[in-house]
Every structure is written in structure tokens, then in C-alpha cells.
View 1 (cartoon, one colour):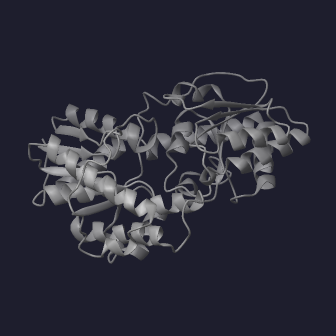
View 2 (cartoon, helix red, strand yellow; view 1 turned 45 degrees about the horizontal axis):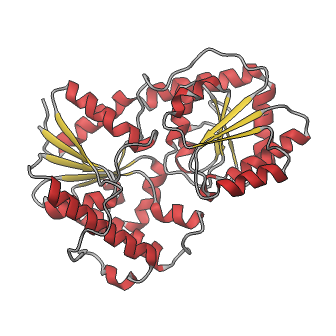
Amino acid sequence: MNILQALFFPPEQPGGVSSMVPYIQEAFAGKGWEMELFSLPKRVRLKGTEEVRFETFDWTAFAGAPIVDKYVQTYKDYVWWTRLRLRKTYDLIHAHHPIAGLAMKQLFPDTPVLITLHSSFERELALNGKISPGGPEERFLTSLYGELEHRLDGIVTVSQSFKTYLSSFVRNPEAISVIPNGFDERRFKPVPHENVVPQLITVCRLVPAKGIDTLLAACSELKKRGYPFVLHLIGDGPIREELEQMAVSLNIYEETIFYGYMLHPEEFMPFFDIFVLPSRAESFGSVFAEAALCCLALVGTDVGGVAEQIDNDENGLLVPVGDPEALANALEKVMLDPSYRYNLARSAWLKAKSAYSLQRVIGQLQMLYGSLGAGGK
């Protein structure tokens, strides 16, 4: 049985789909399945010229909006690259991005095409101030969900909350499957350590949607209360300079380390104490599961997939979005009581091992592939 995993860009990043799919490929190979990975190289730009048509809406009504035009051109590029590179047929194609899913169905109309929707591009753009709610870009991107439902053979998403979000854009939301992301415990595992000063860590792209401004404000409050700490920020992005200036103005620059992009933060993470990320939205929040597998105490916001991973006061703490004082109070509670912190981390580790193991994902995917006609061996 030959299955193609169709990604968007190459799986170079750690975390989420980028790290999960190659391990899925490895696991299925061990079961005797044939599985290939395909993606669009980042250097491929402005090559595609085929006309783009969707069956459920006229995308040209949104033409002229830069984000829409770039999205459609990327779709053309994906089709061009796929025609150039793929010469064989497959028993099933599993796409991990709307462009990949629709392009594959266009070029392989007789092959079952399944898609996993890992995140909402329109929500990310809106939270990062790139588009206006209700504008042409948002309407174009949300229209794609109906197109995916109409043309593809199955839709999967990564959390119940994201399924609920999608339900207003499709005709039959009950047909959407939920398979939370899974993680290889060989990569994410605890390391015994003791830190005299609490070590806080976050891993994310530095964009407004991740709420790092809230985190810095909370850490400033912690310093005013007289608590020592070190905050480790792993990641890069367009507001890094702004955040560094904010750390200076809040008088916590000496307590804060901006690392920039790091290819394998999982090698770093187990040596810290508390993982904190006050996101304004998360479809799943893969990095929380990764931190849990490293046995870190978790502090997050009561949004999306994060709230599905964290049971407040049992395996982590949840706080409202955009509330620095509430976040400071939660961090204070975890920092001051090592036994409480350990119990939270231990509970998070146990839940992550059972609910977010890679083997669980493999089993669920194997059943799903079988339902679409890919029986495997």
C-alpha cells in the first residue's frame, strides 16, 4: 500500500506537523507500509501559471487583496511543482495544508485525498494584525473549508475546539474526525535536574498571537514582588525587537534570554522548570504536549487546544487571555511550591504519555486509512 504525505513546506521545523509526519512515516515503514513525503521547496516562487478554479465559490471576487493573490499564486506553484515531480500513482494521499489537499485532488482526482487541518491561517493573520475580521482575506480563507469538504474524501483536525470552529464553515461538521497530534517519546523526555532559581521557558514564533507581551508584563510583576527567575524565550519572529525593547522598559531584560530560532529546543527544554505560553489562540498547542513529555509544569491560557490538554490545577494552570496579573499569580503559585510544581508536571507527563503518544496517532491513522480503502499489511 503506497501513501503520500503531502506537506506544504519541507519538514524542517521542530514541533507540530513538521516533526510528527516524518516519524509517522518511520512508524508505518516498520509496519510494511510504503509512505513518501512531498512538499513545496521554499525557493519555488512564481512558477505556476495554470488558471485556478474552485467549485464552491469564485475566488476572483477576492482578487486584489495581497494575501489572497499570494495564496492563489502559491497554489499555482504547488500544482506546477507537483506536475514536475510526481510521476507515480498512490493508493491514498494525506495532505496537511489546504493548498496541498486541493492541488493533490486536482491532479489525482481518482485517488482518495484526506486532509488534516492543523491550524487556522485566518485567525493567525487576524490576531497578528495582518487582516481585518470579516474582510476579503478572511472570507476567502474560510470559504476554502467548504471547498475542502466538497472535494476531498475526509477532513481531520487536531482538537475538539478547532472542530467546533470549523463547523460554521462546512455542511456536515460531524463528519470531521479529531486526531490530536502525537509525539515520539525518544525526543521528548525528562532529565533529572535541580535549579535554585526557577527557570521559565517558552518556545514559539514571536508574533502577537502568542501573547509574549503578556508574559513579559507578568514577569515584570514577579520581579516587583521580589521573586528571582530566568525567562528563556526560544524562537524568532517579526516582533522580536519590539519584545526586547519591552523587556528593557519593564526592567526584566537581565532576567530574560532571547535565543532566537533553535532547530531542536527539545534538547534544551528538559533542564527547565516551568513552560509558559499565554497564547491568544491555539488550534492544538503542540509545544505544551512536548513540554509535558519533558516533565515541565505547564501554564497556559484558557483557549482552544491548550484548554483540552490542561485540566486546571491538576496537570497545569490556565489563565484568561491577556491578563498579566492572573498570569503572574499562576507563575508565583508554581514557582513558590516545588512539590506542587512537581505534582503538576508529573500529572502532565502521565497525560501526555497516554493521550499524545505517537503510537496512538499511528493506530488512529491506520484505522482511518483503512476506512478510505488503504488496508495496509
